[in-house]
Image (tube, rainbow, N blue to C red):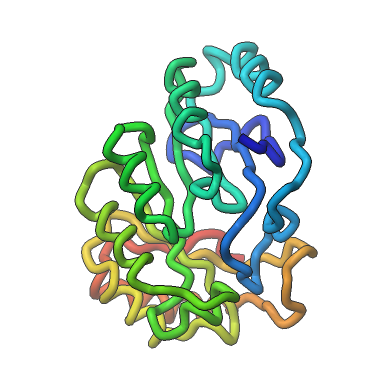
Length: 229
């Protein structure tokens, strides 16, 4: 598997666990607000080898509890299941971040019990998905992945990064109807990493963020704001 980056310690990426975060290369979306745009292309040179990564984990045994797999889009990695099995054999919990566009891969991973937690991005309401993803989108694939998670096979969360011009309270009401009853849903404030694909991407202000949350709460009472500034 191509490990394009490694954050050696994170207190945020896995709920209530100390983890490291592995960044994979390659993504099938081109979200204009992507903060990891350098990871979108396929064929990136590895930042470190699998051997070096597992040596790092061996050194951190007893201190780190979990590994978060993010991207890019990890489900595009052909050897992801084998990589996760190595993580499990090494004694680590595994969290998967995904855009939900490979439901068949997600189904396999869930069926084999390979991950302990999944965070799935819901980029937009159904009608605005292509604009938020930056490519044409078959929304049925997103729906299939959401249904897999809502079946309760593994703890999970949905999350949406709110961006001015792409999201309104009405959009979030539609998202709420889409993921109705989810146990965890976070509306994240957009932060410009300096490497986003669109110069027009901008955050909603705090009042707009709260209005978006209010639109979701009737459908997802557990919804919360994340990263509000």
